[in-house]
Length: 127
Image (cartoon, rainbow, N blue to C red; front, side, top):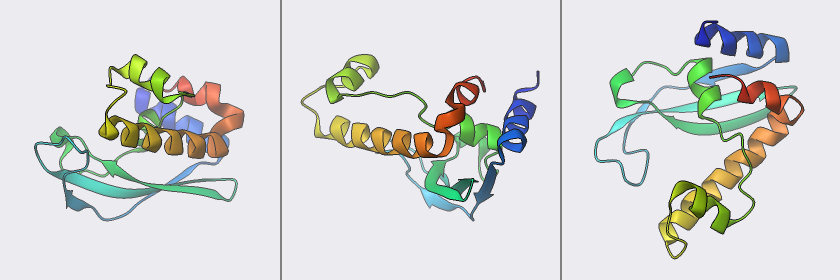
């Protein structure tokens, strides 16, 4: 199956819409060496919205992110403790930067659960 179509089919089936704002240009991640286009995206489902910044890949330039791009980049797995998160992703548990990243990942995961908790298994299948 075409991976883009898989995301579109999911969105249609579950009434998901994606709004993409005009991009800014800058460093998206704390360790970025190069600037990239950053889009303000909003996912909406069942009257609930989640808005976030999406840092486009350097290779994609100013191309708007697709439904596939956005859905596959969402955090779909729970990392219940900071120590678990650090162990899984190789961060130092004494790092304030790692703790800030963990907090952002937890915030995103919680928003994804609100939007997609009832269809999380299907969301995880989009690859």
